[in-house]
Amino acid sequence: MSDAANPNTPAGENTPEKPLDFIRQIVADSIAAGTHNGRVQTRFPPEPNGYLHIGHAKSICLNFGLAKEFGGKCNLRFDDTNPTTEDTEYVESIQDDIRWLGFQWDGLYYASDYFEQLYRWAEELIEKGLAYVDSQSAEEMSRGRGTPSTAGVDSPYRSRKVDENLDLFRRMRKGEFTDGTHVLRAKMDMASPHFMMRDPVLYRIRHAHHHRTKDAWCIYPMYDYAHGQSDSIEQVTHSICTLEFETHRPLYDWFIDKLGIFPSHQYEFARLNLTYTVMSKRKLLELVQAKMVSGWDDPRMPTLRGLRRRGYTPEALRNFCGTIGVTRYNGLTDMVVFENALRDHLNKIAQRRMAVLRPVKVLIENYPEGQTEELDAVNNPEDPSAGSRKVPFGRELYIEREDFEETPPKGFFRLSPGKEVRLRWAYFIKCTGVEKDAAGNVTLIRATYDPATRGGDAPDGRKVKATIHWVSAEKAMDAEVRLYDHLCRIEDLSQVPEGEDWKSYLNPKSLETISNAKLEPSLSAAQTGTPVQFERLGYFTPDSVDHKPGKPVFNRSVTLKDTWAKVQKKG
Image 1: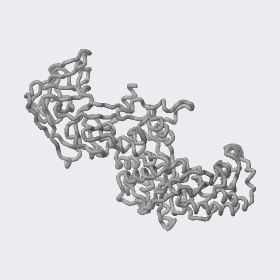
Image 2: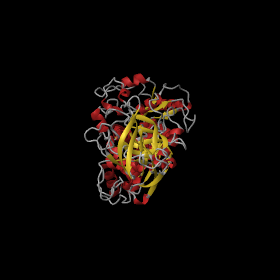
Image 3: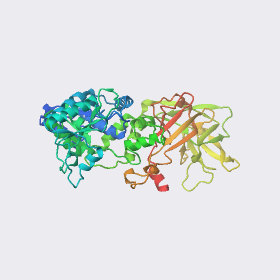
Protein backbone atom coordinates (compact mmCIF):
# COMPACT_ATOMS: atom_id res chain seq x y z
CA MET A 1 0.00 0.00 0.00
CA SER A 2 1.33 3.36 -1.00
CA ASP A 3 1.60 6.10 1.57
CA ALA A 4 0.19 8.41 -1.08
CA ALA A 5 -3.39 7.43 -0.29
CA ASN A 6 -5.13 9.73 2.13
CA PRO A 7 -6.32 7.85 5.25
CA ASN A 8 -9.12 10.36 5.71
CA THR A 9 -11.23 9.07 2.82
CA PRO A 10 -15.04 8.83 2.79
CA ALA A 11 -16.69 5.51 3.59
CA GLY A 12 -16.55 3.08 0.72
CA GLU A 13 -13.27 4.36 -0.67
CA ASN A 14 -9.77 2.95 -0.25
CA THR A 15 -8.24 3.21 3.19
CA PRO A 16 -4.78 2.24 4.47
CA GLU A 17 -6.23 -1.11 5.60
CA LYS A 18 -7.77 -1.85 2.20
CA PRO A 19 -5.68 -3.06 -0.77
CA LEU A 20 -5.45 -0.80 -3.79
CA ASP A 21 -7.45 -1.59 -6.92
CA PHE A 22 -5.48 -1.74 -10.17
CA ILE A 23 -6.11 1.90 -11.12
CA ARG A 24 -5.01 3.19 -7.74
CA GLN A 25 -1.98 0.92 -7.90
CA ILE A 26 -1.05 2.50 -11.25
CA VAL A 27 -1.34 5.95 -9.69
CA ALA A 28 0.64 4.94 -6.62
CA ASP A 29 3.38 3.42 -8.83
CA SER A 30 3.59 6.54 -10.99
CA ILE A 31 3.98 8.70 -7.89
CA ALA A 32 6.69 6.39 -6.56
CA ALA A 33 8.49 6.57 -9.92
CA GLY A 34 8.32 10.36 -9.95
CA THR A 35 6.36 10.40 -13.22
CA HIS A 36 5.14 13.94 -13.92
CA ASN A 37 7.05 14.91 -10.77
CA GLY A 38 4.67 12.77 -8.72
CA ARG A 39 1.74 14.95 -9.72
CA VAL A 40 -1.83 13.53 -10.09
CA GLN A 41 -4.34 15.27 -12.33
CA THR A 42 -7.58 13.59 -13.37
CA ARG A 43 -10.72 14.83 -15.10
CA PHE A 44 -14.38 13.87 -15.52
CA PRO A 45 -15.36 14.66 -19.16
CA PRO A 46 -19.13 14.19 -19.76
CA GLU A 47 -20.83 15.21 -22.99
CA PRO A 48 -23.64 17.66 -22.09
CA ASN A 49 -26.27 15.82 -24.14
CA GLY A 50 -28.30 14.22 -21.34
CA TYR A 51 -28.55 13.53 -17.64
CA LEU A 52 -26.00 11.58 -15.63
CA HIS A 53 -26.87 8.08 -14.42
CA ILE A 54 -25.49 5.68 -11.83
CA GLY A 55 -22.79 4.52 -14.27
CA HIS A 56 -21.45 8.06 -14.39
CA ALA A 57 -21.46 8.11 -10.59
CA LYS A 58 -18.90 5.30 -10.61
CA SER A 59 -16.62 7.35 -12.89
CA ILE A 60 -17.17 10.50 -10.81
CA CYS A 61 -16.28 8.69 -7.59
CA LEU A 62 -13.18 7.20 -9.21
CA ASN A 63 -11.82 10.37 -10.82
CA PHE A 64 -12.58 12.73 -7.97
CA GLY A 65 -11.66 10.06 -5.43
CA LEU A 66 -8.23 9.50 -6.98
CA ALA A 67 -7.48 13.22 -6.85
CA LYS A 68 -8.53 13.44 -3.21
CA GLU A 69 -6.75 10.29 -2.06
CA PHE A 70 -3.45 11.09 -3.78
CA GLY A 71 -3.34 14.81 -3.11
CA GLY A 72 -4.06 15.74 -6.72
CA LYS A 73 -6.67 17.69 -8.65
CA CYS A 74 -9.68 16.76 -10.74
CA ASN A 75 -11.18 18.91 -13.49
CA LEU A 76 -14.72 18.90 -14.82
CA ARG A 77 -14.53 19.23 -18.59
CA PHE A 78 -17.55 19.19 -20.86
CA ASP A 79 -16.94 17.34 -24.12
CA ASP A 80 -19.08 19.76 -26.12
CA THR A 81 -18.01 18.99 -29.69
CA ASN A 82 -21.45 17.99 -31.01
CA PRO A 83 -23.61 21.15 -31.17
CA THR A 84 -26.81 19.46 -32.34
CA THR A 85 -27.30 17.38 -29.18
CA GLU A 86 -25.88 19.58 -26.42
CA ASP A 87 -27.51 22.20 -24.23
CA THR A 88 -26.83 24.42 -21.23
CA GLU A 89 -29.66 22.57 -19.43
CA TYR A 90 -27.46 19.48 -19.31
CA VAL A 91 -24.37 21.49 -18.35
CA GLU A 92 -26.19 22.87 -15.32
CA SER A 93 -27.74 19.55 -14.32
CA ILE A 94 -24.38 17.76 -14.50
CA GLN A 95 -22.74 20.34 -12.25
CA ASP A 96 -25.61 20.07 -9.79
CA ASP A 97 -25.43 16.26 -9.75
CA ILE A 98 -21.67 16.26 -9.09
CA ARG A 99 -22.08 18.67 -6.19
CA TRP A 100 -24.94 16.58 -4.82
CA LEU A 101 -22.69 13.51 -4.89
CA GLY A 102 -20.31 15.42 -2.65
CA PHE A 103 -17.55 16.47 -5.04
CA GLN A 104 -16.14 19.79 -6.26
CA TRP A 105 -13.96 20.19 -9.31
CA ASP A 106 -10.65 22.07 -9.26
CA GLY A 107 -11.10 23.53 -12.75
CA LEU A 108 -14.15 23.91 -14.98
CA TYR A 109 -13.39 23.59 -18.69
CA TYR A 110 -15.04 22.87 -22.02
CA ALA A 111 -13.61 21.20 -25.11
CA SER A 112 -14.94 24.25 -26.92
CA ASP A 113 -12.40 26.31 -24.94
CA TYR A 114 -9.79 24.60 -27.09
CA PHE A 115 -11.39 24.86 -30.53
CA GLU A 116 -8.80 27.36 -31.79
CA GLN A 117 -5.85 25.34 -30.50
CA LEU A 118 -7.31 22.10 -31.86
CA TYR A 119 -7.73 23.77 -35.24
CA ARG A 120 -4.10 24.96 -35.26
CA TRP A 121 -2.92 21.45 -34.40
CA ALA A 122 -5.03 20.08 -37.26
CA GLU A 123 -3.25 22.47 -39.64
CA GLU A 124 0.06 21.28 -38.20
CA LEU A 125 -0.88 17.67 -39.00
CA ILE A 126 -1.74 18.72 -42.56
CA GLU A 127 1.60 20.52 -42.92
CA LYS A 128 3.40 17.37 -41.70
CA GLY A 129 1.59 15.29 -44.32
CA LEU A 130 -0.37 13.48 -41.57
CA ALA A 131 -3.87 14.71 -42.46
CA TYR A 132 -5.86 15.38 -45.63
CA VAL A 133 -9.25 16.65 -46.75
CA ASP A 134 -11.44 13.83 -48.07
CA SER A 135 -14.35 14.69 -50.36
CA GLN A 136 -15.95 11.24 -50.52
CA SER A 137 -19.46 10.66 -49.27
CA ALA A 138 -19.94 8.97 -45.91
CA GLU A 139 -21.03 5.79 -47.67
CA GLU A 140 -17.94 5.77 -49.88
CA MET A 141 -15.64 6.28 -46.90
CA SER A 142 -17.36 3.48 -45.00
CA ARG A 143 -16.90 1.04 -47.89
CA GLY A 144 -13.30 2.11 -48.32
CA ARG A 145 -12.36 1.28 -44.76
CA GLY A 146 -12.79 -2.41 -45.45
CA THR A 147 -13.78 -4.88 -42.75
CA PRO A 148 -12.01 -6.18 -39.64
CA SER A 149 -10.72 -9.08 -41.77
CA THR A 150 -9.99 -7.23 -45.02
CA ALA A 151 -7.79 -4.19 -45.61
CA GLY A 152 -9.23 -0.83 -46.54
CA VAL A 153 -8.37 1.09 -49.69
CA ASP A 154 -6.89 4.57 -49.96
CA SER A 155 -9.25 7.43 -50.63
CA PRO A 156 -8.82 8.94 -54.11
CA TYR A 157 -8.19 12.24 -52.29
CA ARG A 158 -5.49 10.85 -49.99
CA SER A 159 -2.71 12.10 -52.29
CA ARG A 160 -3.79 15.73 -52.24
CA LYS A 161 -0.90 18.15 -51.78
CA VAL A 162 -0.36 19.96 -48.50
CA ASP A 163 -1.26 23.34 -49.96
CA GLU A 164 -4.52 22.04 -51.41
CA ASN A 165 -5.45 20.42 -48.10
CA LEU A 166 -4.70 23.60 -46.17
CA ASP A 167 -6.75 25.67 -48.60
CA LEU A 168 -9.74 23.35 -48.43
CA PHE A 169 -9.56 23.05 -44.64
CA ARG A 170 -9.43 26.83 -44.22
CA ARG A 171 -12.38 27.22 -46.58
CA MET A 172 -14.24 24.58 -44.58
CA ARG A 173 -13.74 26.75 -41.51
CA LYS A 174 -14.98 29.85 -43.38
CA GLY A 175 -18.26 28.09 -44.14
CA GLU A 176 -17.86 27.82 -47.92
CA PHE A 177 -19.09 24.22 -48.05
CA THR A 178 -22.30 22.48 -47.02
CA ASP A 179 -22.53 19.73 -44.42
CA GLY A 180 -21.05 16.46 -45.63
CA THR A 181 -19.09 17.96 -48.52
CA HIS A 182 -15.65 17.37 -46.97
CA VAL A 183 -14.06 15.94 -43.83
CA LEU A 184 -10.53 16.11 -42.49
CA ARG A 185 -8.97 12.67 -41.99
CA ALA A 186 -5.73 11.58 -40.35
CA LYS A 187 -3.31 9.83 -42.71
CA MET A 188 -2.46 6.60 -40.90
CA ASP A 189 -2.68 3.12 -42.44
CA MET A 190 -5.67 1.84 -44.39
CA ALA A 191 -4.36 -1.71 -44.04
CA SER A 192 -3.96 -1.51 -40.26
CA PRO A 193 -5.36 -4.50 -38.38
CA HIS A 194 -6.58 -1.91 -35.87
CA PHE A 195 -9.74 -0.75 -37.60
CA MET A 196 -9.76 2.64 -35.90
CA MET A 197 -6.31 3.48 -37.32
CA ARG A 198 -7.63 3.42 -40.88
CA ASP A 199 -7.57 7.17 -41.50
CA PRO A 200 -10.12 8.28 -38.89
CA VAL A 201 -12.12 11.49 -39.35
CA LEU A 202 -10.82 14.46 -37.34
CA TYR A 203 -13.24 17.23 -38.41
CA ARG A 204 -16.64 17.36 -40.04
CA ILE A 205 -18.69 20.28 -41.36
CA ARG A 206 -21.75 21.03 -39.27
CA HIS A 207 -23.60 24.30 -39.68
CA ALA A 208 -25.24 24.29 -36.26
CA HIS A 209 -25.60 26.69 -33.36
CA HIS A 210 -23.34 25.80 -30.44
CA HIS A 211 -24.52 26.44 -26.88
CA ARG A 212 -21.27 28.30 -26.04
CA THR A 213 -19.47 29.35 -29.24
CA LYS A 214 -22.76 30.29 -30.94
CA ASP A 215 -22.14 30.48 -34.70
CA ALA A 216 -18.39 31.11 -34.61
CA TRP A 217 -17.62 27.63 -35.95
CA CYS A 218 -19.11 25.44 -38.65
CA ILE A 219 -16.51 22.67 -38.38
CA TYR A 220 -16.27 20.58 -35.24
CA PRO A 221 -13.62 18.11 -34.03
CA MET A 222 -14.48 14.47 -33.49
CA TYR A 223 -14.25 13.03 -29.98
CA ASP A 224 -11.20 10.89 -30.77
CA TYR A 225 -9.32 13.91 -32.04
CA ALA A 226 -10.34 16.36 -29.30
CA HIS A 227 -10.16 14.13 -26.24
CA GLY A 228 -6.47 13.38 -25.86
CA GLN A 229 -5.38 16.88 -26.83
CA SER A 230 -7.81 18.38 -24.30
CA ASP A 231 -6.27 16.13 -21.66
CA SER A 232 -2.83 17.27 -22.79
CA ILE A 233 -3.72 20.97 -22.62
CA GLU A 234 -4.88 20.47 -19.02
CA GLN A 235 -1.82 18.28 -18.34
CA VAL A 236 -3.97 15.39 -17.16
CA THR A 237 -1.67 12.68 -15.87
CA HIS A 238 -4.21 9.84 -15.61
CA SER A 239 -7.05 9.88 -18.14
CA ILE A 240 -9.49 7.32 -16.77
CA CYS A 241 -12.06 5.89 -19.24
CA THR A 242 -14.38 2.90 -19.39
CA LEU A 243 -13.33 -0.24 -21.25
CA GLU A 244 -15.17 0.55 -24.50
CA PHE A 245 -12.54 3.24 -25.09
CA GLU A 246 -9.65 0.76 -24.90
CA THR A 247 -9.68 0.38 -28.68
CA HIS A 248 -9.46 4.19 -28.98
CA ARG A 249 -6.21 4.40 -27.01
CA PRO A 250 -3.87 3.99 -30.05
CA LEU A 251 -5.54 7.08 -31.59
CA TYR A 252 -5.18 8.94 -28.31
CA ASP A 253 -1.47 8.15 -28.19
CA TRP A 254 -0.88 8.77 -31.94
CA PHE A 255 -2.12 12.36 -31.85
CA ILE A 256 -0.14 13.22 -28.73
CA ASP A 257 3.01 11.67 -30.21
CA LYS A 258 2.73 13.31 -33.64
CA LEU A 259 2.01 16.73 -32.13
CA GLY A 260 4.77 16.38 -29.53
CA ILE A 261 2.58 17.67 -26.70
CA PHE A 262 2.20 16.81 -23.00
CA PRO A 263 2.02 13.00 -22.76
CA SER A 264 -1.28 12.35 -21.03
CA HIS A 265 -2.05 8.63 -20.84
CA GLN A 266 -5.35 6.77 -20.92
CA TYR A 267 -6.31 3.91 -18.58
CA GLU A 268 -9.51 1.88 -18.80
CA PHE A 269 -11.78 0.23 -16.23
CA ALA A 270 -15.01 -1.77 -16.47
CA ARG A 271 -18.19 0.24 -16.69
CA LEU A 272 -21.08 -0.38 -14.32
CA ASN A 273 -23.90 -2.66 -15.45
CA LEU A 274 -26.82 -3.26 -13.09
CA THR A 275 -29.47 -5.98 -13.17
CA TYR A 276 -33.13 -5.16 -13.81
CA THR A 277 -32.53 -1.69 -15.20
CA VAL A 278 -31.60 0.25 -18.35
CA MET A 279 -28.10 1.72 -18.56
CA SER A 280 -28.08 2.78 -22.21
CA LYS A 281 -28.53 6.53 -22.72
CA ARG A 282 -30.19 5.80 -26.07
CA LYS A 283 -32.74 3.46 -24.49
CA LEU A 284 -33.38 5.83 -21.59
CA LEU A 285 -34.11 8.54 -24.16
CA GLU A 286 -36.57 6.18 -25.87
CA LEU A 287 -38.44 5.75 -22.59
CA VAL A 288 -38.64 9.49 -22.06
CA GLN A 289 -39.72 10.26 -25.63
CA ALA A 290 -42.33 7.48 -25.61
CA LYS A 291 -43.64 8.82 -22.26
CA MET A 292 -43.21 5.40 -20.68
CA VAL A 293 -41.72 7.27 -17.74
CA SER A 294 -42.59 10.74 -16.47
CA GLY A 295 -39.20 12.18 -17.45
CA TRP A 296 -35.48 11.97 -16.79
CA ASP A 297 -36.18 12.36 -13.05
CA ASP A 298 -38.75 9.53 -12.91
CA PRO A 299 -37.83 7.60 -9.73
CA ARG A 300 -37.60 4.37 -11.73
CA MET A 301 -34.83 5.79 -13.91
CA PRO A 302 -31.17 5.09 -13.05
CA THR A 303 -30.36 8.76 -13.63
CA LEU A 304 -28.96 10.62 -10.65
CA ARG A 305 -32.00 12.90 -10.91
CA GLY A 306 -34.33 9.91 -10.70
CA LEU A 307 -32.42 8.22 -7.88
CA ARG A 308 -32.31 11.48 -5.93
CA ARG A 309 -36.07 11.95 -6.31
CA ARG A 310 -36.66 8.35 -5.26
CA GLY A 311 -34.74 8.92 -2.03
CA TYR A 312 -31.23 7.62 -2.71
CA THR A 313 -28.57 9.47 -0.76
CA PRO A 314 -25.15 10.58 -2.04
CA GLU A 315 -23.55 8.65 0.83
CA ALA A 316 -25.27 5.45 -0.35
CA LEU A 317 -24.11 5.98 -3.94
CA ARG A 318 -20.52 6.66 -2.87
CA ASN A 319 -20.51 3.62 -0.59
CA PHE A 320 -21.95 1.48 -3.38
CA CYS A 321 -19.22 2.59 -5.79
CA GLY A 322 -16.62 1.79 -3.13
CA THR A 323 -18.15 -1.65 -2.53
CA ILE A 324 -18.18 -2.81 -6.15
CA GLY A 325 -14.61 -1.60 -6.68
CA VAL A 326 -12.70 -1.04 -9.91
CA THR A 327 -11.76 -3.89 -12.24
CA ARG A 328 -10.88 -4.50 -15.89
CA TYR A 329 -13.59 -7.13 -16.38
CA ASN A 330 -17.10 -6.31 -17.53
CA GLY A 331 -19.76 -7.90 -15.40
CA LEU A 332 -23.29 -7.48 -14.13
CA THR A 333 -23.79 -6.12 -10.60
CA ASP A 334 -26.87 -7.37 -8.78
CA MET A 335 -29.36 -4.62 -8.00
CA VAL A 336 -29.54 -6.03 -4.47
CA VAL A 337 -26.00 -4.78 -3.84
CA PHE A 338 -27.09 -1.29 -4.88
CA GLU A 339 -30.23 -1.40 -2.76
CA ASN A 340 -28.34 -2.75 0.25
CA ALA A 341 -26.03 0.26 0.14
CA LEU A 342 -29.11 2.46 0.51
CA ARG A 343 -30.63 0.27 3.24
CA ASP A 344 -27.40 0.38 5.23
CA HIS A 345 -27.27 4.17 5.15
CA LEU A 346 -30.97 4.84 5.72
CA ASN A 347 -31.08 2.38 8.61
CA LYS A 348 -28.66 4.66 10.43
CA ILE A 349 -30.24 8.03 9.64
CA ALA A 350 -33.95 7.56 8.88
CA GLN A 351 -36.45 8.25 11.65
CA ARG A 352 -39.19 5.66 12.10
CA ARG A 353 -42.82 6.45 11.52
CA MET A 354 -46.01 4.41 11.17
CA ALA A 355 -48.06 4.35 8.00
CA VAL A 356 -50.81 2.05 6.77
CA LEU A 357 -50.91 1.66 3.00
CA ARG A 358 -53.95 -0.59 2.55
CA PRO A 359 -56.10 0.27 5.55
CA VAL A 360 -58.85 -1.65 7.28
CA LYS A 361 -60.47 -0.15 10.38
CA VAL A 362 -60.24 -1.67 13.85
CA LEU A 363 -62.79 -0.76 16.54
CA ILE A 364 -61.55 -1.43 20.10
CA GLU A 365 -64.88 -1.97 21.80
CA ASN A 366 -63.69 -1.80 25.40
CA TYR A 367 -61.64 1.38 24.91
CA PRO A 368 -63.45 4.37 26.41
CA GLU A 369 -65.45 6.35 23.87
CA GLY A 370 -64.12 9.86 23.30
CA GLN A 371 -60.77 9.10 24.96
CA THR A 372 -57.44 9.61 23.24
CA GLU A 373 -53.92 9.31 24.57
CA GLU A 374 -50.37 9.83 23.37
CA LEU A 375 -47.89 7.00 23.45
CA ASP A 376 -44.10 7.21 23.36
CA ALA A 377 -42.43 5.89 20.19
CA VAL A 378 -38.70 5.70 19.54
CA ASN A 379 -37.56 7.63 16.47
CA ASN A 380 -34.59 5.45 15.54
CA PRO A 381 -33.39 2.47 17.60
CA GLU A 382 -30.03 2.72 15.77
CA ASP A 383 -29.52 6.28 17.00
CA PRO A 384 -30.39 7.01 20.65
CA SER A 385 -29.77 10.72 20.07
CA ALA A 386 -32.79 10.79 17.72
CA GLY A 387 -35.06 10.69 20.77
CA SER A 388 -38.75 9.82 20.72
CA ARG A 389 -42.11 11.24 19.69
CA LYS A 390 -45.74 11.09 20.79
CA VAL A 391 -48.16 8.96 18.75
CA PRO A 392 -51.93 9.46 19.19
CA PHE A 393 -54.00 6.40 20.12
CA GLY A 394 -57.78 6.05 20.29
CA ARG A 395 -60.77 3.75 20.05
CA GLU A 396 -60.60 3.47 16.24
CA LEU A 397 -57.41 2.54 14.38
CA TYR A 398 -56.24 1.51 10.95
CA ILE A 399 -54.08 -1.57 10.36
CA GLU A 400 -52.77 -3.13 7.17
CA ARG A 401 -55.34 -5.31 5.46
CA GLU A 402 -52.72 -8.04 5.02
CA ASP A 403 -52.20 -8.12 8.79
CA PHE A 404 -55.65 -9.72 9.23
CA GLU A 405 -56.94 -13.10 8.07
CA GLU A 406 -60.43 -14.28 8.95
CA THR A 407 -59.39 -17.86 8.22
CA PRO A 408 -55.65 -17.82 8.82
CA PRO A 409 -53.39 -20.29 7.03
CA LYS A 410 -50.84 -22.31 8.95
CA GLY A 411 -48.00 -20.12 10.18
CA PHE A 412 -50.03 -16.88 10.13
CA PHE A 413 -49.40 -15.20 13.48
CA ARG A 414 -50.93 -11.79 12.90
CA LEU A 415 -54.47 -10.75 13.78
CA SER A 416 -57.31 -13.24 13.30
CA PRO A 417 -60.51 -14.10 15.22
CA GLY A 418 -59.70 -15.05 18.81
CA LYS A 419 -55.99 -14.31 18.35
CA GLU A 420 -54.00 -11.67 20.21
CA VAL A 421 -51.28 -9.43 18.76
CA ARG A 422 -49.18 -6.53 19.97
CA LEU A 423 -49.74 -3.06 18.54
CA ARG A 424 -46.37 -1.35 18.07
CA TRP A 425 -45.64 0.98 21.04
CA ALA A 426 -49.22 0.42 22.32
CA TYR A 427 -51.28 -2.51 23.68
CA PHE A 428 -52.21 -6.12 23.11
CA ILE A 429 -55.49 -6.46 21.20
CA LYS A 430 -57.65 -9.49 20.43
CA CYS A 431 -60.06 -9.84 17.50
CA THR A 432 -63.66 -10.53 18.58
CA GLY A 433 -65.43 -10.32 15.23
CA VAL A 434 -65.72 -8.64 11.84
CA GLU A 435 -68.18 -6.76 9.65
CA LYS A 436 -68.35 -7.28 5.88
CA ASP A 437 -69.81 -5.61 2.83
CA ALA A 438 -72.14 -7.27 0.34
CA ALA A 439 -69.19 -8.69 -1.57
CA GLY A 440 -67.84 -10.39 1.53
CA ASN A 441 -64.93 -8.00 2.09
CA VAL A 442 -64.02 -7.21 5.68
CA THR A 443 -64.85 -3.55 6.37
CA LEU A 444 -64.42 -3.47 10.16
CA ILE A 445 -62.51 -5.57 12.68
CA ARG A 446 -63.91 -5.61 16.19
CA ALA A 447 -61.42 -6.11 19.00
CA THR A 448 -60.71 -5.65 22.68
CA TYR A 449 -57.52 -4.39 24.29
CA ASP A 450 -55.71 -5.13 27.54
CA PRO A 451 -55.01 -1.79 29.28
CA ALA A 452 -52.34 -3.46 31.42
CA THR A 453 -50.15 -4.01 28.35
CA ARG A 454 -49.48 -0.33 27.60
CA GLY A 455 -46.05 -0.02 26.04
CA GLY A 456 -46.26 -3.50 24.51
CA ASP A 457 -45.58 -5.93 27.37
CA ALA A 458 -47.95 -8.00 29.50
CA PRO A 459 -47.38 -7.86 33.28
CA ASP A 460 -48.39 -11.50 33.58
CA GLY A 461 -45.61 -12.48 31.19
CA ARG A 462 -47.81 -13.85 28.40
CA LYS A 463 -46.34 -13.66 24.93
CA VAL A 464 -47.71 -12.93 21.48
CA LYS A 465 -46.15 -14.02 18.24
CA ALA A 466 -46.63 -10.87 16.20
CA THR A 467 -46.31 -7.11 16.45
CA ILE A 468 -48.15 -5.01 13.89
CA HIS A 469 -48.16 -1.29 13.13
CA TRP A 470 -51.19 0.99 13.10
CA VAL A 471 -52.34 4.61 12.99
CA SER A 472 -55.10 6.47 14.81
CA ALA A 473 -58.18 6.68 12.57
CA GLU A 474 -59.14 10.05 14.04
CA LYS A 475 -55.70 11.65 13.67
CA ALA A 476 -54.41 9.90 10.53
CA MET A 477 -53.17 11.97 7.62
CA ASP A 478 -54.30 10.95 4.13
CA ALA A 479 -51.48 10.63 1.60
CA GLU A 480 -50.54 9.33 -1.81
CA VAL A 481 -47.80 6.72 -1.72
CA ARG A 482 -45.92 5.53 -4.79
CA LEU A 483 -44.37 2.08 -4.67
CA TYR A 484 -41.49 1.79 -7.13
CA ASP A 485 -39.89 -1.44 -8.22
CA HIS A 486 -37.38 -2.59 -10.82
CA LEU A 487 -37.70 -1.00 -14.24
CA CYS A 488 -37.17 -4.32 -16.07
CA ARG A 489 -38.52 -7.79 -15.42
CA ILE A 490 -35.39 -9.58 -16.66
CA GLU A 491 -31.89 -9.32 -15.23
CA ASP A 492 -29.95 -8.40 -18.35
CA LEU A 493 -31.44 -6.52 -21.29
CA SER A 494 -28.40 -7.37 -23.40
CA GLN A 495 -29.78 -10.92 -23.58
CA VAL A 496 -32.91 -9.80 -25.44
CA PRO A 497 -32.86 -11.57 -28.84
CA GLU A 498 -32.01 -9.32 -31.76
CA GLY A 499 -35.12 -8.06 -33.49
CA GLU A 500 -37.30 -8.18 -30.39
CA ASP A 501 -38.56 -4.98 -28.83
CA TRP A 502 -36.56 -4.55 -25.63
CA LYS A 503 -39.37 -2.41 -24.19
CA SER A 504 -41.58 -5.52 -24.02
CA TYR A 505 -39.32 -6.65 -21.17
CA LEU A 506 -40.14 -3.67 -18.97
CA ASN A 507 -41.71 -4.47 -15.63
CA PRO A 508 -45.45 -3.62 -15.82
CA LYS A 509 -45.52 -3.41 -12.02
CA SER A 510 -42.65 -0.95 -11.67
CA LEU A 511 -45.04 1.64 -10.22
CA GLU A 512 -48.07 1.19 -8.00
CA THR A 513 -49.85 4.31 -6.76
CA ILE A 514 -51.82 4.13 -3.52
CA SER A 515 -54.12 7.10 -3.17
CA ASN A 516 -55.64 6.51 0.29
CA ALA A 517 -52.72 5.63 2.57
CA LYS A 518 -53.06 6.60 6.24
CA LEU A 519 -50.03 8.15 7.96
CA GLU A 520 -49.34 9.13 11.54
CA PRO A 521 -49.82 12.90 11.93
CA SER A 522 -46.17 13.72 12.66
CA LEU A 523 -45.47 13.08 8.96
CA SER A 524 -47.29 16.31 8.12
CA ALA A 525 -43.95 18.03 8.88
CA ALA A 526 -41.94 15.79 6.53
CA GLN A 527 -39.60 17.73 4.23
CA THR A 528 -38.40 16.75 0.78
CA GLY A 529 -34.94 15.25 0.92
CA THR A 530 -35.54 13.79 4.39
CA PRO A 531 -35.98 10.00 4.34
CA VAL A 532 -38.14 8.11 6.82
CA GLN A 533 -38.77 4.46 7.51
CA PHE A 534 -42.40 3.39 7.46
CA GLU A 535 -42.16 0.65 10.05
CA ARG A 536 -42.37 -2.85 8.54
CA LEU A 537 -42.89 -1.38 5.05
CA GLY A 538 -39.67 0.20 3.83
CA TYR A 539 -37.88 3.51 3.41
CA PHE A 540 -39.79 6.43 1.93
CA THR A 541 -39.15 10.06 1.05
CA PRO A 542 -41.46 12.99 0.20
CA ASP A 543 -41.58 13.46 -3.56
CA SER A 544 -39.49 16.47 -4.56
CA VAL A 545 -41.94 17.50 -7.30
CA ASP A 546 -45.46 16.65 -6.16
CA HIS A 547 -45.26 16.69 -2.35
CA LYS A 548 -47.04 19.80 -1.05
CA PRO A 549 -48.40 21.02 2.31
CA GLY A 550 -51.83 19.46 2.69
CA LYS A 551 -51.15 17.10 -0.23
CA PRO A 552 -48.42 14.71 0.86
CA VAL A 553 -46.85 12.37 -1.69
CA PHE A 554 -44.27 9.80 -0.59
CA ASN A 555 -42.03 7.64 -2.77
CA ARG A 556 -40.79 4.24 -1.65
CA SER A 557 -37.02 4.36 -1.95
CA VAL A 558 -36.41 0.71 -1.11
CA THR A 559 -38.07 -2.10 0.81
CA LEU A 560 -36.73 -3.20 4.17
CA LYS A 561 -35.30 -6.33 2.58
CA ASP A 562 -35.03 -7.73 -0.91
CA THR A 563 -38.47 -8.90 -2.00
CA TRP A 564 -37.76 -9.32 -5.72
CA ALA A 565 -36.55 -12.91 -5.39
CA LYS A 566 -39.86 -13.85 -3.77
CA VAL A 567 -41.80 -12.11 -6.53
CA GLN A 568 -39.77 -13.96 -9.18
CA LYS A 569 -40.47 -17.32 -7.55
CA LYS A 570 -44.19 -16.62 -7.41
CA GLY A 571 -44.19 -15.35 -11.01
